Length: 306
Length: 279
Image (cartoon, rainbow over all chains, first blue to last red; front, side, top):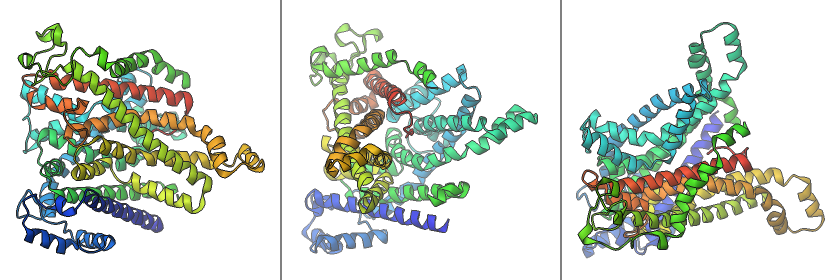
């Protein structure tokens, strides 16, 4: 177990190094990093201080090491658009909003998808199962950004039930969370259904039936408890779709989180902030995957040896 | 099992859906009623025909008086072309590396598989953001992002299959007959994994169309004024209250396109490669 965790940790570190290499490489591929990192009207003094800070007059590998050293200390330069703040400060300020919205959407998808998958498996082949299948298919084919706009149109503008966009409490979060959860609900429901089908065919379910355990207890307790491991593995992938979702959905709903920030930073040509978002997102993503892997190995001993 | 899946995904509806997608895409130049870039300034924000508009602009016009239907039809070309090129590049790189890693084993295999792990550990959106920030929106950037996201899935799956294929008798016999390694890989092993490559590629088309649309919508994908579907939805975003049709119809086009290729992919998988794991 310890060995497994150590290997996975090293792999995550290597992946993180790879993303820093890409982020670093792209600044240099596009010509002089001075152009990417400074506004067009930068003074000669600013240019010189940037060159000194990042060591741009030294060989490329030394520059990368300098970049990496600075990045490890959380120093990714100063923001160009949000004057007076470092890139990391700008990103960290926006992070709680993203985590709140992402958390709500994960919660929503679990609450909807797992019962949906269980019911579909329990009533396999019936209308219930078929409708769940259609919902899952639609959910995987719907563009999230479009769904978001349609939700605003119908429920915020048309019916007036929710605010259209912006920051706020729960009412502000409901529509974006639904739009963000749509894809995950589809995938999670399909996974839960197939895991439940296997589980319902198993010997212990037959035994429980023979013993006369009530059907709802068989389904919701005995079978689901064993089937729940499968959707768990999906949570690592879910983290990736959440990152995409946060960028897309925060833009649609003007939700002031890190995802919206990344688009604002790209539009404002604020490369240090983009770098900070990308690296921070990568850390969050790798961390979630690491925890999921560890949990999974804890639940299923076979994984540890793989 | 197989029969019930076939009945669940009958080919006819899939074919109809695909025809709705492909025919306008291939023949947009002839079928589209208007030039997708031309503004009809007197006919700005015309509603669709069933919403009080005219037959001249069946699905209405946008803020600049451009025909929504024509723009959607031309947009299909970009959606299909970008996914075709992106998936082809990704599948080619992934398949080649998978073949080499599975056949050569040893250090090559270890290096390739570590690269696969790294690539799978990086969410596509991060690459897209980094590229867009450095290069601005461009076709090349979208294709590179797509290829970068996909190659690892192909490499991992193909390598796994090659590992078992290379132990089969016909490979040993080809070796005894004096076939070079390159010849064995390309002529004897590659044909055995083509089914998998085709099925995987088809299953990815929907994912890639959605990815490209999302990137374009955010302004970090295809550059304006290309009538890419994501950009069309973005065009009508602030007008959804007064002119809902500008955003609504391109979204429906994305939905139908992704739905039909997803159904086709599922159907192909059941026919050609039932053992392939769902990703």
